[in-house]
Image (tube, rainbow, N blue to C red; front, side, top):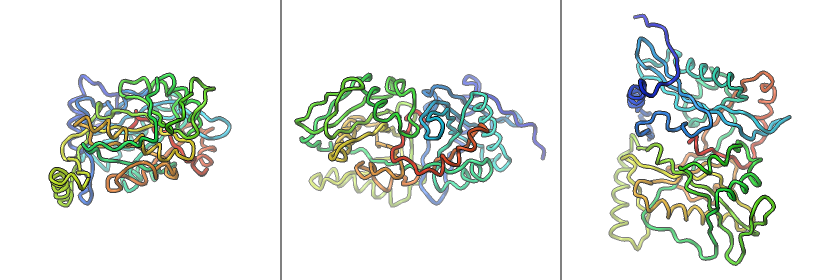
Length: 384
């Protein structure tokens, strides 16, 4: 049986929204041997890129059938490579191909078409993130399209309990004004890998709930502008309400999870003195907070980071819809030791792959990927 010509074009919300949502449902089939997540875009297929500076969704049609989609966004970030430390990068996400049309080169055609848009937009590098054991994605991007391994950050996930966490009385917490938060980020994190130059736009976005700092009680918070002072130990983070954009739902949950979820909730209700955290219900759509811009300094900074995460947990516990708190840190960053998380829900090694899109950048790509990563890594909440 023959097929017509594959047509790849830009997404049209008025004509394509329902068809893209139908394709997403068709692709809700995870691997049978492990748990996976479904994404509910709440009627907005481009919700995950809508807050980016520049973005595009492409769709693929074959014989008038929508058979594939891909999304991309562009921004300017810090990238440590000579002779400059800034680069225009394009992020690839949301690649979907209808199950009946796979293994026909549609996925690679979509990626190449998106790369053409990146090149026309003067992008230096394209990059993508996938699970380390996603064999199909690895073969497509690395083996076929010449992407190379770049970084392996850790995704840390902590469930939200309706029991409030105890905040240490040894520390002070304060919410910063947006201008002060931006000044701090530019002063202390602008050299961090993949730091977005438009950090101010992120902080001013309605989905960013605020930036908080923690420091030892008895010391004062004296930062005011780029030359202000900070305490001997301090930490800060910002909170992004991803649940306002899309919801998640657990698929292929094993029987052991169902039994543990029900029994833990029963124990929490009947025997609260044991203080055992109940496993949230992930089988129904839920929202989450994403923590970004985590920074610390000083001998007590580890405890201060933990205190800030406990504070965010208490914020989230007031909202029934928020079931987990998520953050992502550099693979070698010891910061992960101080962040509350469940190993069962977390991913110790996410995989970022990168590709140079300009001839003059190709020679520096080898040096960029082979250079030991900086401990810190800034993960843009707009790309979660």
